[in-house]
Length: 390
Ligand SMILES: [Zn+2]
Image (tube, rainbow, N blue to C red; front, side, top):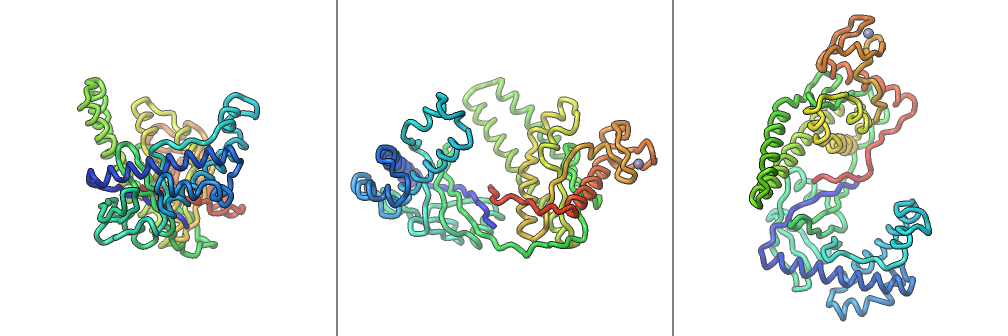
């Protein structure tokens, strides 16, 4: 399976200037190539190469590899544009947006991402440095950093091209990794149902609860601080608010990594698959009081779901997504479904058979059962093709 890992570069000011000049030059060259491609209707790499390669190397001083990448990037941009025009992202043919998008050459931002292959970029994993081609020559010992888990994946599985990216004033390399998957378990012994929620971030049908109380309290504090800083609206306050948001995102990511790891390990150990609700369900399901609503919308559910999916795929654990309708109101014993079964946020109490359970635990059992049904009815494991772990 393919994974994308993002690491942050820590260039010295001199190195950063060289990287910036390189992005600018490569994108100028690509923008020029795009205008030639538009004029001559040459949008395949081989054809466009004939018209542009020599000049890109001569006029912009790009090396052979960089020139090829600029040409390929241009062709890729036209391919993407064509696909977007076809699937209606710019409205109907003849509309103003459509005409505007198709009637002029592609233009690259000065800081658009630049692809690098192994001849232009080499990695020294132990030293955590890269050696990277720039228009000012080869830069050696450019330091990079990332989370331990990412660095491990990177060192063991990186294959092919990486993109140099400048985002929010920082430099990143986005590397593609090719990871061997375990043989998929085609005969799961059952399913582990996982209910994702707010009060409890994840509850499994085995009864394991990943409680969110402490995290939510901390996030509430963070939010208060942020809104105070926003009211102040000075430059330093804005900077502090931004730094805080970044910190919170990193903490959430770390927690999501830990939870997903445990859940997948448990399913793998017991030969089961994992059943999750489709993500839209989590947002739409609960009628929540207002303070909870903000918590719900800002908790990175999608990220937790994606982490579970890719770790499961790697381990050969099948994942199925089930219809989330009424999982919180249905009795997992007798299947009586009513809003009255849910006297409070935390408690499930069946009006018909009298079954009482923790509400999220009951829901996770419904998800487990629906997962098993979906599997029996011919569902396939539906882990996404490409996941970004950052
Ligand atoms: Zn019941």
